[in-house]
Length: 549
Ligand code: G6Q
Image (cartoon, rainbow, N blue to C red; front, side, top):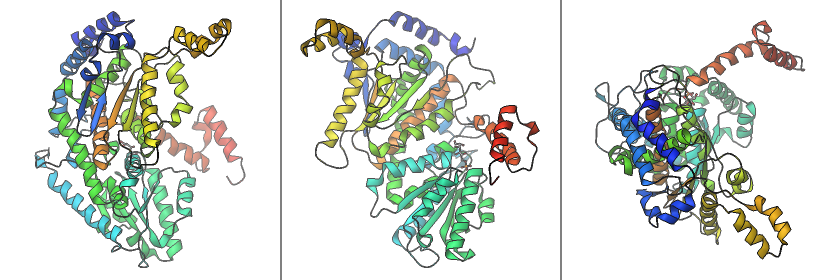
């Protein structure tokens, strides 16, 4: 058995879990009128209510003891100190330096990285302002109106999610931002369809500058531009790049002053704070981007200094551990009641599942406990008319995060009040449900015969005890969004520390990439199909028999 399972803290939690079985949220709320005050906290513009989880003060004390026992504080300090905590890639993990708004030095191998970080930020400001003001024009002197970010995974999801989330904060004018990620040519073709090459700026965002999808899309975008403007030299004014691979960017033909650097201590899924955020700076303005950084930094300071039992990311992480490891709940829903946050679940899906979807611990052993959950979600209220049925009455219990802003951005009638009412009502329905007896009373009061009411009541009953957290933002602003993203980053970090896994590598994406190379050769007719398995060979043969192959 692993150290984790054998630890005193883990055993105490297992015993506590057994003793707690049968305890309901109705009973917990009934017994403690101060439950909301006890199980909630504020950090800046974010308020977390976690009272609708099956926890008591003892549960939280035991979970915090587990975090302490697993060295969460030590790991946290090691990250901020630039230690090489991404051990399988032998790298520090220092995205917190990218949003460090203090004058604290952030060392990597004894050298402060802050001067380099600030220098790139200042170059991003100069460039984004030149594009936004119309000083940096296209090749034919026309103003840039559209920016197309070409990247995938960590080089796409973050800036895309932020641009969508903050559309209403564009300052002073909004350049249209587009994101092309999929190697499926539909993505590029459909994006370019409405664009004017004279007014379009491409950002090739790739840490490695070797990613197949991005390089394929970038080459096709380049060809489209040159064909439209009939001049190879146009590339210099219509392309910028963000990469750690400066050599490859110049080989592509991107002018050195349009190449924005970042570093190998920034993981892809943690890179929106780096120059990977250039599309954000251009679309929304550098001031907005810096406010986002400031929000992330505020959460970093909270995470770094707050005691574990009053530390928002630690609490979210521990609630996850409680559900995943002690209640066998392997799925987690993120439900933003905010249309602007419609890409947040997709972003968090990568953050969480690529970071903690691991089964080998830091000592190279297979773990004997569950790790990261299957994370998914969609905005409310839409989800209510779709998958919430399962959340309320299905056989799986899915802990959920509800995210909503107290104040909406627009003041259109009662829309925002209705949104808030729905959000709160859902958490209430999930937690407290409706008993069969209550359903019966309701049905009878509607004039139904006793027999009919008895028959229908089980369908109308809700079991309740479906846990959720509510994250209430004052408003959705660049600052509060920055804090929200950093909250989730640190939550994932804490869970990884407790599970003793490296949350910063992603070897699980490699095999598919390797195999795709081989299958591609077969589809192109350059390699025999014999080496493929029977299923893949059969599919490849079918595809190759189609006209045009
Ligand atoms: C993120 C992953 C991955 C990566 C993409 C794009 O943490 O590493 O999603 O961001 O594969 O990689 P490049 O930026 O190198 O093109």
